[in-house]
Amino acid sequence: MDFKKGRLDSTKKTRDQLIAENEALYDALNAISDGFILFDADDRVVTYNEKQIGLFPSVADVLAPGLLYRDLLLAQANSGQMKAAHGREKDWAEERTKQHQIADGSAREQNFADGTVFRLSEHRTSSGGIVAVRTDITDLKASEHELKENEARFRDFSESASDWFWEMDADLCFSHLSGRYEELTGQSIAKTIGRSRRDVFATSTHTISEQEAARIEASLRDMEAHRPYRDLELTWPRVDGTFGIYSMTGRPVFDENG
Image (cartoon, rainbow, N blue to C red; front, side):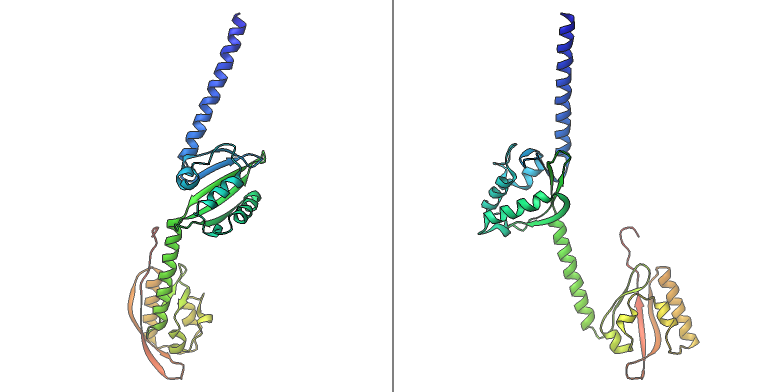
């Protein structure tokens, strides 16, 4: 009797441990900021976290263990939320199922009718199933779009200005020169990009006075020390062979790491 009782206690303890481990795993999944779904080798839902439901409320009612991924896609397509699926719901579900089955970890983007954008990635498990991760990147895409617009506005401004504008990278090599640079100096933008100002001055055939050389060297030291400089004046040949007097100003731009 004591032996049998011991076996029952051991079985009960093992079951309790499994329950505790499952609860810990579920808590861990719900702590993830991304949507998560695990599919078995037959492409049926095994489990998912609460974030997945929050990210895709249009299919929350149908999402359940045992649901085929293709049926989940059809429900999503029929909800009207998928821009790419409008009018071709079944074809879209078939295409997405094939992409899902590749499960090589590569990421793709999915655009919703309400403007939401998600990054999707699928990873094959050792048992033949698939782990699917969904990340809301709507704010990231909006920031990227705003950055591109700001860059385009800057380029348009620099190209239309009467002066020329320049940018240098962290190594103090030219990364951008506006179109007026060639017009005013006769120097090739293509041959200047990627070079430092010190290199440009050193390889120039134009003779610079001692006073200008001293001013140039002082500005170069300021740049190399990441200090701003203003109104560096020097004489430089124009395209037509005449000489112009130019005034240059520059200041460093620091990132969040200084």
